[in-house]
Length: 544
Image 1 (tube, one colour):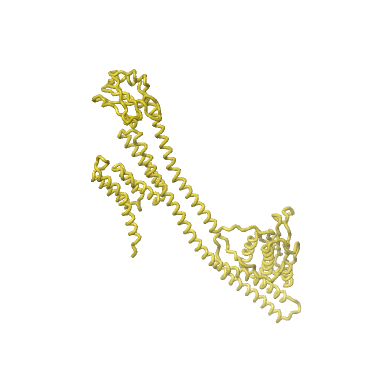
Image 2 (cartoon, helix red, strand yellow):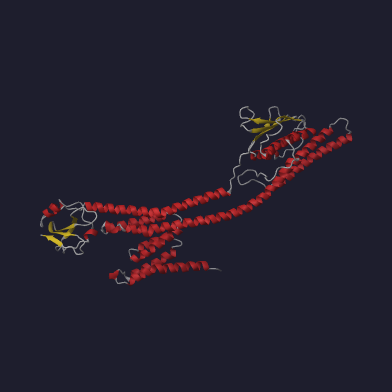
C-alpha cells in the first residue's frame, strides 16, 4: 500500500510547526524583563499551536482562531497568524464564516481593552495588524484557491471535450445508419409505390388475359409486402438514433437522399404520370435559379414524398403540384423571397388506403424542410383530400448550434471574471480597511486633541487649593491622550494626588506646552506646565 501521500503531508505539517514554534521557544528563553513569558505558559501555547497545525487541513478556521487567541499570551505567536490566515483562504470554500470570525476577534478585543481601561489610541491601531496579518493573507489564499479552481476546471473541461468527441464519433455512426434508412424510405419507398400503381393500372387494363390479370394482382400485392418489409427494416435501422442532445429527432446528415441523377421536379411529375398517377404541375416548374441547392433538394423531396403518399393512401385520386413565388403581398406566402410548394390530392375514389402508414415520411420531410430554413404544414382538405404545403426561402438561414464550445467559453470567461474580482478584492479590501481604520484613528485623535485644550489664561487663573468644582468649570471636555501624556516627564506628583493632563493649544501636528493638574480630595493640590521641544529632556516648570 502506497502511503507516500500521507507521509508527505505529515512531514509538511511537522516542518510548518517547527517554523512557527521557533520564535515562541526563543521568546520563552528570554528573561521576563525582556519580554519572556513563563515557561509553562509558553509550553501550553506551543502545544496548542501543534494542535492548530494538525487541524489546519480539516478545520482551517478553527486553527486560525486558536493562533489568534495565543497572540496575547506571547507576541511571537503573531508569526503564525498570516500563515494560518493564508491556509484558511486556501482550504475554506465559503468566506462568510471567516469574516464572522475576524469580526468576532475585533469585537472581543475591543471589549476587553475597554474593560481594562486602556486608552483607545493605544489599542485601536492594533486592528491594523489584524488587517495586515489576518485579512490580507486570507484574501491572498482565497484568490489562489480560485485560481487553482479555474485551472482545474479548464483541465476537467478539456477531458470532458475529449469524451464528447468520442460520443460524437459514435453518434455519427448511428446517424449514418439513420441516413441509410432515410434514403431507403425516400427512394425505394417511392419506387415501390410507383410499381404498385403500375401493377394496379395493368390489372384493370382492358383486353388483358385473366392469367396476366392475376399476375398483375400478385405483383401489386408483392409491392405492398415489399413496402411493409421496407418499413420494418427502416424501423430497425432507426431504432438506435433516438434524439440528439437538444431533444429533437436525430436528423441524418451527410449527403443527399438517393434520387435519379439530375432529375427535376418536372421530370419527377412526368415519371409519376407515366406510372399511372393522375398528377398535373402548375405554376413555376422549378425553384428560382438563385436558390440554394439545399432548398432545391428540399422542394424535390416535398413533391416526391407527397406523390408517394398519394399513391399509397389515395390510389387513383387526382394530384395537383403547384410551385409559386411569394412576394409578401400577394397572399401566396407568409414572407417574401420564398418558394411555396403545394401538393394536393383529392379523396381516394376506391375506399381505404391500400398500404399501411408508417408515420415516418412526413416527420422526416418536416425536419428536411426545417433544415432548409422553411416550414411545412400538412393536413386534410375540406373535401376529404390531403394537402402538403412547404414554404422554402431561397437562402436557408444558419441553423443555431448549441455546442460545448459555447458553454466552455462561458465557463472560462466566468471563471476569469471571478478570478479578477478575487484579485481586486485581495488588494482593495485590506486597503479599504486600512483607510477606514486610519480615518477613525485620525478622527478620534483630532477630536481628542481639539477638545483637550486648556487656554493659557485659564490655566494661569487657577490657584492651588482651589475647590475642584470651580476648577472643572474651566476644564475642557477631554484630557490629553495617554500616549501623548506619557511622552512628557513631570516631577513626581504630590502624595496621594490624582493628576490630569491638558494641552495649551490645538496643534494637530505636535505637542507644545502640556499642563498637569493634580487633585487631592476635592482641592487642587498642584499645577505644572512643561514645554515639549525636540530636546530629549524638557524642563518642567511648576507653579505653586
